[in-house]
Every structure is written in C-alpha cells, then in structure tokens.
Length: 273
Length: 264
Image 1: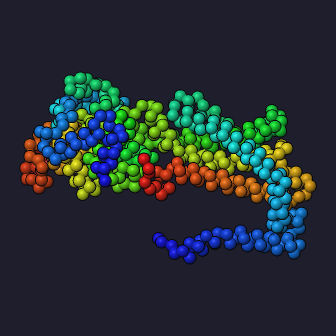
Image 2: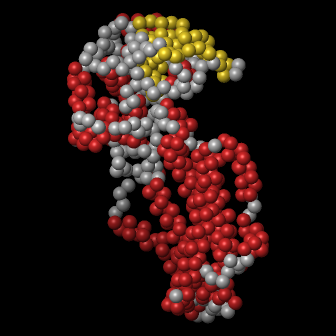
Image 3: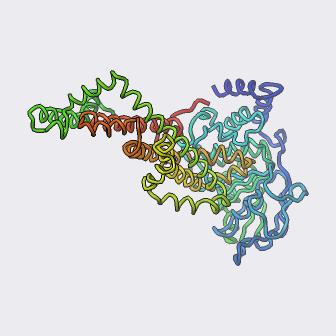
C-alpha cells in the first residue's frame, strides 16, 4: 500500500521520471554500506565562539572542527550551553563573537542546509502528518514527504493528525521533516530524551541507518553517555562553555551495547563530564 | 463504554421531561384560571398567536429584518475585531499603538451609548447595526489577540528553521493556532449580538422582533410578547448550534473534537 501511494504521488508531483528517485533510494537502502550511499555532509567549523546573555557567559571560546559526514556526540551537564550552541549553528541566534563556517564559507542567519531536530517534536497540530513533513512546501513536496515518511516507517500514517500519534511516532515525523530537506548538517538536540527505552533504541537504529545511507554531518546532543558511545564516531565533552574532552570512537558498526571496549570508553567520558 | 439502545433512548427522552411538565402545568394553570392570561398567556394561546402572525407574514418579515441586522452588525464588528486582533497579536508596534485604547473602549458598556447613538443615527437601521457591531467587536478582538499571543513560540521557531517566511508563518502557524480562541470569541459575540439587538429594537425601532413585542405590550397582547421571547430563544440556540458546527469543522484536528483521519 505504501509503495502504491509512493508511485501515485511521484507521478503527480515529480517533474521528470516518476518513481526514479524512489528506485534510487531503494538501491541505497538495500546496499546499506556507506560506500554506495549518498554523501550529503559538509564540513562544519566553529571558531572561538562566544555567547553571552547580559552578564551570563554561556559559551566561552568554543572551538570545534567537524569533518563532513561525521557523527559527533556532545555530552555535558544540563545548562552547559549545548542547546544554545545548537541555536547558534542553525542560525536562530547570532554568536556574541566568533565564526561558524560550512565547507570553509562563513555563515550567518538561518541556513537551508542546516536542520535542527528539537527535543520536542513541534508538529503543527492542525496539519496532517504529511503536511507537517512537507512544511517547507518545496516543489514536489508531497512525493518527497511520502518518501521521508517511508524512511522513518510511517508511510501508513500520512493522513493522521499529530494528536493521535505516540511520542515516538511524533519524533519520527519530526525526523522525517528534517530529512525531507536533505540536510548537509543535522543537529539533534536530545531528541530521544523524552522517549521510553525501547522506543529510544528503535530511534537509535533508525538514525544510524539513515546516517549510514546519507552521511549528513550530524551533531547529537545528549546527556546519556551510553547513547553517545553507541552512536557516535567521536564524542566531545562540554564544560563551562567550551570543549574540554574530545575522543574518537573507533569501534566497528553495528555496535553492541555490551561491548567491553565501549563500556570502558563510557567510564572515561563519564569522569570528564 | 458501550450503551445499549434502551439506555440511549432514555438519554434522548430524559432532558425533555422537565420542560414538558412545566408546559403542561402552565397550560393547566391557564385553563383553570389560576394564571390570568394578562399575566401569562397559555402555551396554546402563544401557539395560536404564532400561527396567526406566521400566516399574515408579519412574523417572517420581522424575524428576517432582525436577523439581517444581527448578521450585518456581527460581520462589521466581528470582522473589525478580528483584523485588529490579528494586527495587535502579530505586531508589537500595532499592539503598542492600539491595545490600551481598545482596552479602554472595551470597558465602556456599549448599551450605555444608546442615547448618543439615537442622537447620531435616529432610529434608523444604522443605529441598530452600529450597536451590534460595537458589542461584538470586543469579544472577537480580545480572543483573536489572545489566541495569536499564546501560540507556542516553539512552533514559530520550528517554522523559521524550516525556511518559512513571515507570510507563510502567519497563514500556517499563527492563524490556525489562534482559531480555537477566535471561535470562543465568536460564541461570546453571538450572545452579545442578540442581547444588543433586543435592547436596541425595544428602544427604537419600527420593525423587527423587539418592535413586535413592544408593540404587542401596548395592546396587552401578552401572547405575542411571549412569542417574541420564544423566537429570540430559538434564534440564539440556532446561532449557538451554527458555531458548534463551525468549531467541529475548523477544529477537527483538535483532540477535543474526536479527531480522526483527514483527507489530504
């Protein structure tokens, strides 16, 4: 049923070859490995970022270089400025001083290629799931939104109101909404914090699958160190408005939570938080 | 909870028991002479009055003219209130300029200006429409303003991050988000609309239901007076039902309205 709708909507909205993009996606999905997937990611450089609200200094000279396609986790206690940093990168707030550059080009203001998945799903309750995903209403948005919903496993819910979805489903719709814009840089601000453990594990697997396929540069903010080491290529610890610890996670994917190497790394990171 | 048909049938009947018994007691009282027809006419007398006035076309034309006044006044007052509410809700500058003035005006009981209105417009149509417009403007203004102001900031931020412009944010986030509140304002406004019209028509009119009842009073036709009151009650109820229908349509996404699937 899902694929029937895909074709029909592709036919309505896609300008040239109906069903072509769908076919491509399926190939990528079945191939699975990073080598055959797309490479949407871009390099992100944060140079000497400062952010103050009046007397309160939130960021104090934060430096971070994130190579294209990396999945970086930032861990830190609450109130350490993680969410503020996300707002700076996406362009909702300007830094007090310092630079943000994408692929070497300094940026200012909201960026089309940077998408933020908020802690709460933030769906418009008065629009259907499909309209929420296609909120930007880019040309051909229907077909793209159906594809994105298919990616997150909600192709059968596109005509529902957000109010009837569970918390995990809402967050998946929000994920589809950021994916539909084919982001180069995806920011995840504790998106799984409010979900139960089982749903969270599903979301981790989903995120990893989509990231392996599309290789968007990803920053995952979390206070769950286990989540960080299970998903990320690299984990940094933020304290007092700057990066105080930086470690690569080299364990092969798919990772097992019980891996002693990961457990040891988790201990090391916890000491630094 | 699944209700059996007999329970559901009882639930249909029970609400009518009290009004029906009152009607029966009332009729009995009038028939036995306990109630003088000059104090309160029997329901059957009111029914006869209804039939006669309906037959002569008198009732229909009076209801029509009252209805026209009500709707015209609501359209003008409600429309203006909605526009002002959108303006002050969406723009900080407009709020600064307009809101305190409107709040001051809001606190003037609009029926208190009837003497002025008669001096300005005489007992012309304009007078009644003006009063209804003034009465309905403020509830809709306040609720529109409040509705837009209380929209979750997070949704607006989300829309910005997803590349929506100011115009799109207004149409797709602010306006639908304010709708529940606007409709609450509309229901308030409908109540005020009938109240204002009744007062305006009884004080200064040469047509309409208010005029019909005041005229009947002069000739001690209590049956026509009661008929007028009943017509007002029915019109009020009809207006309320209409808003409920609008709410169900416009707010079908809202969990309170038993949301199901939407056709897209």
